[in-house]
Length: 366
Ligand code: UDP
Image 1 (cartoon, rainbow, N blue to C red):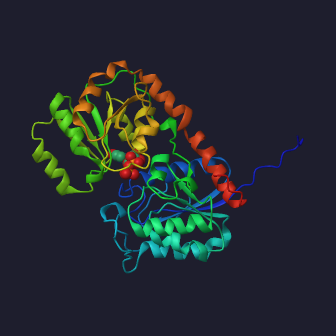
Image 2: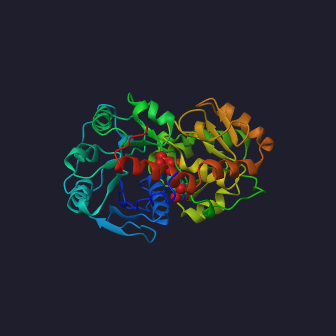
Image 3: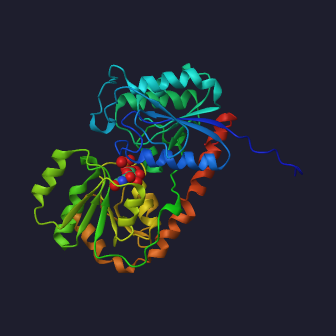
């Protein structure tokens, strides 16, 4: 045993955000909170860090370089054969041009974009890149380029859940780092109000209509919180379920979100796709709110059926209703404890720090 263990090396990290919209706008979905939490925790641990993001971003007081340019189209709106499209004056291209210019000031670049270009550029850079992949397999072009990177640079592809990894043919070469939140932002609520909640981007892959249908069937009021990404989809839901007691609260800051979320009897998670993780699951649990989720994707690895919520047959409104009837059997303290044990910023920070340091020391512990 060494008497004086080698002090931990402080890393210089360059976080390159996604090119969908400014940080803080909600356009980037869960990636925004994920980036914020990882950055805050790595700075707290003594690493230095700069965030590169679209012009108009907030970086919550952390060092930020804002880059102008046109956004990318969200990958989840495209078909499997979709070609790679990069607009004129692309913010994605501009962000990576900046990263190339300043790379020698850093030890590691962390890529938060689910886009082809950063993967393609990886071998052209002189410093390593950790790619935190935010969604499952969506297009052939993305699968191909991610596989190329994991083959050439083993250990550099991070995912949030095993289910997400399994959507790729190279699942066993992905490193699962899960996710985490700052528990001090979320207050525990022992006595809920009589309503339930649904939180997320209002877009077809999120399956809001099933939660609205469950609310209409049971008469339990549903509060909906999140970025309204697809107006036509939202109008269709209102038309299809005219008697559902729903209320749209808008896109809220984390603090406003948790103030409403913590009062919910349960959070419904009804995604139609393989949710890579589902930040909203751990946000709800942190407040003591049980999560009723379809048994697929990230939420199925977070929620313990019968303990911190219920996992039900995917796409079945009937099963959602059954679970709502059993809510009183869940101890809200057990929900908070689930996050404290596995998804705190501390727990997530340990996983991330180890991943970054493995990449930097070229020791790939998959
Ligand atoms: N969110 C928010 N305000 C809201 C509703 C949601 O800031 O009113 C955030 C929430 O904190 C979470 C993200 O939106 O981080 C949704 O992320 P999730 O991983 O659940 O899904 P994604 O949008 O990435 O598919």
